[in-house]
Image (cartoon, rainbow, N blue to C red; front, side, top):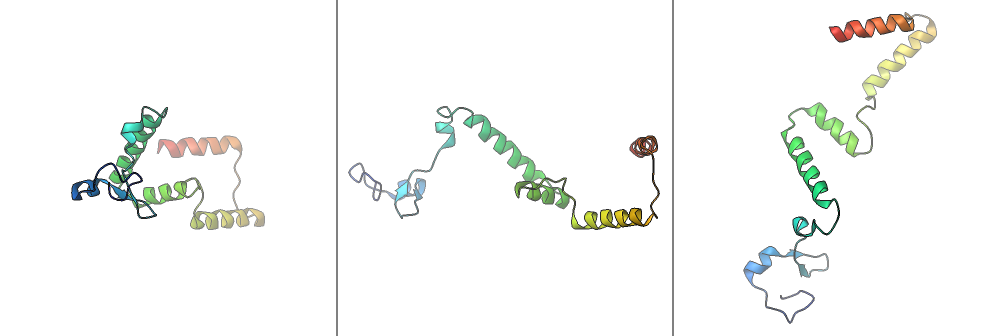
Amino acid sequence: MGKLANKRTTKSTPALRKTLRKRSNGSLTKPYDAKKYAGSVPGLAVLNDRKSAIMERIDAVQDDATLKALERTLDGASHYVLSDEQMAELEASHDRFLRGEAKLFTSAQMISRVRKAVRG
């Protein structure tokens, strides 16, 4: 196969070259077939199925905020991390609290407010 490690096997043909991929050193090799080797590595088939399902879901996303959250998650941050705008709002609220300008609520009042907000 032309530049394969064992040159004595067969000659390279244009059709064969299309199925081969180039290594970093310039030699040709057959591409890795995950399905072919899935049975030899425990859990690989399940992992590949999960990856495919996730990629399909990502492809269907049309919302910029969801994609940004996904990017932050893949970068190592959770999408529960506050944005710069949210941090500024939190700091402003904390400053109002320190100046004594913020309204304080008891635990029972907060539970009531949250339940009311959730009900709409």
